[in-house]
Length: 294
Image (cartoon, rainbow, N blue to C red; front, side):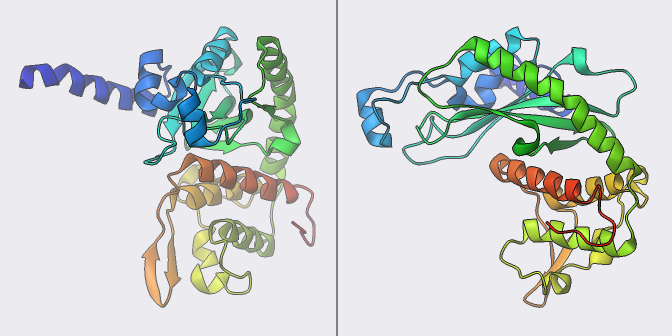
């Protein structure tokens, strides 16, 4: 029996390594990580159980994955929301893609595509633009209102629409890179730096009032760099080091007079939300001089 387990163990280790190194996943590997992406059509019984309308057209994520791969994008990550109820097998999931033709040798950042979908009738399938930062392995997600996204209701699907939207998204990426360059050039005063940190912390601690967040988190510690590459007073440095702390939970806070260590945000739905809010927050500081209204 132990001999039969060895290949399985090796396969899992190899898959974890591929995810860490961001190398392309096979269809079988995506299915292992995210079985809900391969759910076939909904039977009348399942539709009734999930409360799905007869007008709902099942668009399997597996089909969209294949279509995106035809456009030279490779899947490098797959996740699904944990579910133990009737939605198990139909729950929300995320597939991340990169295009090697869009990664230049000297670039510190490159674009990603993020596909989210569910098969329970609660979500459209959606594509967003992400940016991956090589220095610290941070994944940033552009706020949809700034760079557009594809949202397709489950009432029909056209490959041409997908192709056109992805092409339009990539045309907008240089504008994003331009914003990054502005962030790299923008130096924040100490007061703005601490203000930025406070507003970012409030994105994570949504039940805390602005006037008391400074009692929970030491903002002077919160803005400190963890790695040499993120040191400095430029907006880009500050954005990245605080974004990493907000998502990865690498900071201390005090609640009910107890010192605690923040936990990483593990759910991808919350990660996407926080990333987009962090991007919008940083964008508001590009042109800031004296006061920032966000």
